[in-house]
Amino acid sequence: MCGIIGYVGSADATPILIDGLRKLEYRGYDSAGVALLDGHGLQVRKRAGRISNLAQLLQEQPVQGTTGIGHTRWATHGGVTDANAHPHLDQSGKLALIHNGVIENFQALRDQLTAQGHTFRTETDTEVLAHLIGGIFDDLPGARNKTTLLEALRAALKQVSGTYGLALMHVDVPGVILAARRGSPLILGIGKGEHFVVSDVSAIIGHTRDVVYLDDYDLVTIERDCFDITSLAGAGTHFQVSKVEFTSEDAEKGDFPHFMLKEIFEQPESTRDAMRGRLSDQESTAKLGGLNMTSRELRDIERIVLTGCGTAFHAALVGEYLIESLAHLPVECEFASEFRYRNMPMEKGTLVFAISQSGETIDTLAALRESKRKGHRTLGICNNVGSTLARESDGGVYMHAGPEIGVAATKSFTSQITVLVLLALLLGRIRHLSSAQGIEVIQALETVPDKIRQVLGEAENIKYLAEKYADAAGFLFFGRQQNYPIALEGALKLKEISYKFAEGHPSAELKHGIIALVGPEVPSVMIMPDDAVFEKNVNTLEQIKAREGMVIAIATEGRKDLAKVVDDIIYIPKCPDYIAPILSAIPLQLFAYYLAVHLGCDVDKPRNLAKSVTVE
Ligand code: G6P
Image 1 (cartoon, rainbow, N blue to C red):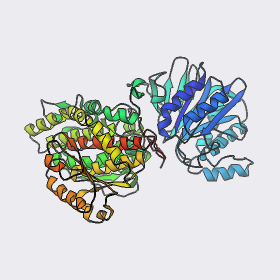
Image 2: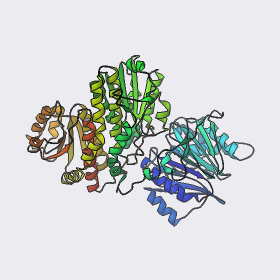
Image 3: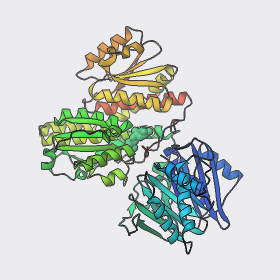
Image 4: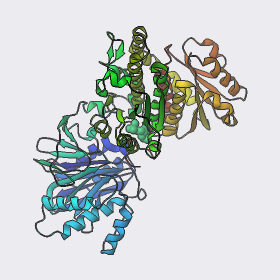
């Protein structure tokens, strides 16, 4: 949600900023801008629309400088206009600022500053922040240097409520960028004779892989040859330099036309990486050392709460079925956005898992904090190493899926489910699962990458079906038990990237209202692999067919009988129930992808969405 990048070094900052913004574009893409400091002052270029619009503007009106900041926006306060794009200037026009987050008391601050004679040119909360900091700096007596600019920033932020990951620079303090974080991700990149601040490492891995994941209330000063981190309170702060594990190629599309397709096709490897080193044949269980819990502590768990947003929430719902059936532990799932404001009674033995690809979703972080505040052990399942979730949780499991750039989550979903199978196995083996049953689960897990490859082999057939049904008015998705969340996820993928109306439901709910929507113009996708409820799903399917509804079935290979009843069928390999959600999710990802491409939609950057929602 909004991408920010700042650069100080000796190279021309413009191409570095533009390249970085292209990598950050998935965080928000309704407008973009840069500000550079050259020997003569501040130069700002910004434009509504994609980064390519900004790049075009920069060709027409080039700027140069070795200190610069850049921003790609996902609008919160103020419409999508050139003026509302970042960077924003202060009253003097000498301070430029970019910001990701929401300043909650911006209206009160704006009124106060207006009364002092400030004139605002935009409707954004960010412009208020720029004026506040710039005003304080202008009123400070004495020298105008990085120390006093930092003092002004610190004084301003003490008046601010809300969230920010921000970076700023000032004409009177050349060669310096100040940045601050509270609630929105911010990372310091340490190069040779150059330093960066960014909201996501993918924007700088072509330049450096040495980074510091900044904490809330950290303030950082970067210059060409040095950096300094202090806290908002004024003290020095402890920090650690980390190495980014993935390479710049991992964050490129390669030969694929879209990141989404590349990421769908990476799932044999990404699920393998989620299991790597975590399966113990000897003990017939999963080893998840990052949980930081002893067997006894795991044994004492009486209930699990899983929370997350969007696709991560759907993975949580799958986890509910898996943990209940393999480990016989009560599980409750709750949207993180609801959890944070709900006063859910939670007994002492409750273990909370926050699930998030990015580890930066603000609602999920708020749920984590609320749970910790109540004294519960709170763990994370996340992909983004060094993310806020990873750092604030009491432990957890990394998905190791590699960077996911496509806005619609795909490989992160199947990795989350894989991790949840591992968790269910571990908890099950501590309770009632025998060693032989544990081995069965391990063997089934080991077949997953190959089975995914087999499903991916259906891509051409799925493309054909997506194009065949592309004119439908809307879609219904049905599944039962652990495949009910897959119905939700299939509908979500389609909505997100094709803008088709779609809903997911438990199959048997059809007759309780949804059936009114069934007709030739609204096809149904039925997820109905061979399992205990297969025949029940057939009932639902017959009810749809009786009302002239078209049906596409996701079924187990060999179900030739079904092919005669449904309109179209996509086969997945035979597998145990706890593996089926991983395999049945993939055809639905491909279906949504090909349908959206057919309709000419921008699948990697769907309208109105952002990859990681870091505002409430
Ligand atoms: C946004 C994205 C979704 C994603 C959700 C949770 O809404 O558009 O695709 O599932 O955030 O993201 P997280 O990073 O917490 O998994």
